[in-house]
Image (cartoon, rainbow, N blue to C red):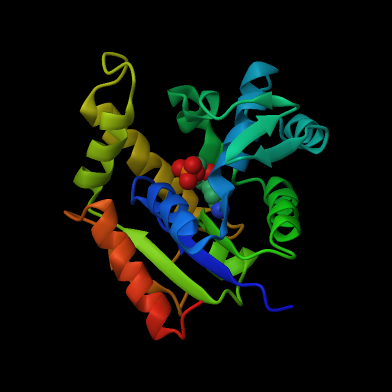
Length: 219
Ligand code: C5P
């Protein structure tokens, strides 16, 4: 097996998904957005009206849902939910769902299955530490909290729904839960390359990643 995994971890709003997706297109790897899987399960939990602390029912519904990727879109039970999973309500609840070890185990299995025979760029929180500890190269993207909040705020379609401060607090709260949970918390892998994206545009970050990839022997 000589397929390659490129891991891109980091906190919310660090630019992981935009950068990982574009990088995958440039180098012709498959892109796996692991956060979207946690988001899809969270969407299901919201739609089914399940309480966030009803762990058994959450696990039941997660195990009885189908999650598929087709052309970089995510399908939950056959329905394209790529836009819906970016909803603010999902943002507010996803980290609570992602804390549940059994949910994490199920999602790790899906990611490893997708990557079995493919070159992949995977973005998330625990890719370099847990899901693919032997990844070919690992990046840890970060940025100042102000900049991360600004990016998320600018992505909001309906800006009257939340203030900038609320968006910032939501990011801080997710970061806190993600980095303090027991099961595979958000943290930089020891062998990950730290990239601070503050004040940099996508192309500048991509150039940096490509430089490190080439220094690592290229692909
Ligand atoms: O990357 P994104 O913001 O879409 O991730 C949504 C949430 O899913 C994160 O805040 C985190 O709680 C969870 N997540 C995770 N592990 C991953 C990817 C995402 O716990 N590998």
